[in-house]
Length: 363
Image 1 (cartoon, rainbow, N blue to C red):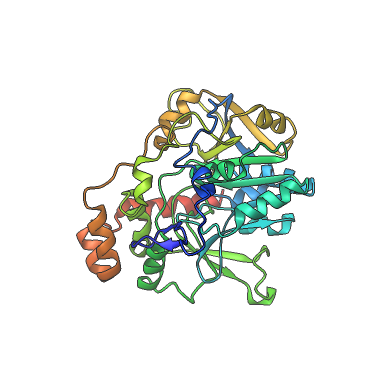
Image 2 (image 1 turned 90 degrees about the vertical axis):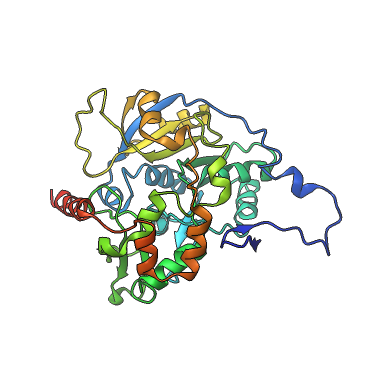
């Protein structure tokens, strides 16, 4: 993998060892994208009944229910985590104590490394595997494997697009977050919604990231301009603006997102302030697993409601005309000038939103 020039990692053939067998071309999901697409069989508004998991999750905690089920069967769960160096990468976990490392959204391109090879090895050894990631990461895994495995469960997250690790590094450096925290939460979990927060681990726990003593402190909205740039689609990978996976037909067994738009047309009688997951059940394998999840509370909804509330279920994010200029400025311009030039200042609504999240967390 090499830097494409704007911080995005892309594959590059090492011509010094290439024998022109074409294997890499055959497993590239962009070149050979013949994956089966499934229209969701069920659309669910749901959340975990495990209160502690719901509090740690970005929305309703549906992922934790799937993960705990697989882990209880001596399986392996793969997903994105953030290191103490604030780098995002995929890992596999084998016990529920490590689940915290995979919970919560990460708005950065996750480095996969040899994750696909690890997944394949576990599958060949007969272990149940849950792989979670962006739709293109799932598509890449499925074309890499080149065969169906009944012991593989895939789960994609509805994706707006991914900024590069380099862009996030610049934000952390300009905002002086490096060295002040053990991680970043992109979604303040004390109440449902968007808000950056620093994660601090109690030193009495010896740096145990799995401890319940992980404390989250919201980043001041004035400093949280990364999320506003994200919401304006200013720094995504070029491929994200013409993504082939932004359609109702899904390649994964499950699809997850926040359930935005819930209840706008058909009433939803349950409180939503703690977060509600949208879960699309796409395959017969997923339907079978759904019947084995007693910790998942759900209500079936209409698919159209989910599509209308989640733009990227049916559309790629629009490419801003100033996208290339923004990325160049991001690497060269100081924070104050970037925020002013691109209209990334916090407004009153950002502070009100933070207050509402805090009030919701006290209910």
